[in-house]
Image (cartoon, rainbow, N blue to C red; front, side):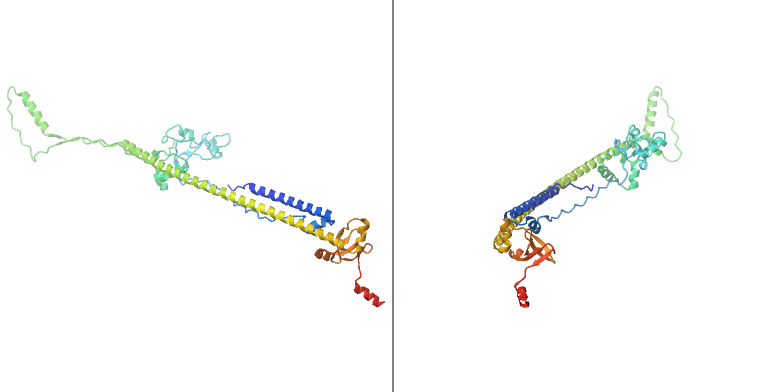
Length: 423
């Protein structure tokens, strides 16, 4: 989960829906108040401002931003792997020395070329061919028969295994991570040619040891006429009886046969190890897929629950707004009815202009000397703002003087008595 910003469609729809609901509610409330103002003869604009219906706001918590997932780092080989007889078409075609293994360069080739920037510079210095050759040159010969342009041969991989202190199983496990198939012959130690061919065992004839000391003289043998053939045959038989021939020893296996058997065993062992690792990787991949599927399912269920909860909250909010609007409309209607009833009860002096004009008296809220009053737009009569708001009574306290821009307050009974007394 690269860190990548995610597009939240549900949030966008929710914001648009909230904005639409607020606009509809505000317009409906204003229309209701204006309709009541026209019917009950009061200043609808003032009532809208007093009720706070000009700007309706809904406080809503925004969802927390998800943390960006850290970028996955490229996996590097724990130790070099040998040449596997394959050619990566998306990589540079030059060979790298790679501690004597002569493997393909892993950098990407330049656009329209065969080599990366560094290998191209190396090739330009060496007459168009990289110092260690190309992957095509290595593929043209056997895995162990390559010789670079300067006559150097690859190093046996068993030497690098000793250097990094790794065994065959560890190498195969590392190769599975990168999808590389390693030839089993890489795990065979090279034969030392300096020793030469083994000497052949000679078959020696053992003769029976005679008695010690000087040999005795042989007795003279009389030759009988006509017995030459028998005498020669008897001498040959006597000589053969004294010769003991040692049976030939059983010939052992040659180094080539032993190497072939070891290669076969190593190949079978490597095949079994690769099979085991493949089964292990397949099992781990299946477990990872099951886990990912389970997590995706849980995430989908959680998203559905959150979406349902959000929808329920929006429905509750819409109902609450509708109830508030109904309440406001009802209060406005009651206020208008009460204002109409009080208008009938106001003094005749204040009602006369309305009777003459036969039009409703429209009042406006004013401030004079830090106090609020209601002033008639037509007659200039000033009413007590507090009494009208609290009790709905239209108490006349004076009249507005346009020339002096102040209120001429009505005299109270106490003031009149004081004037009469002073007279």
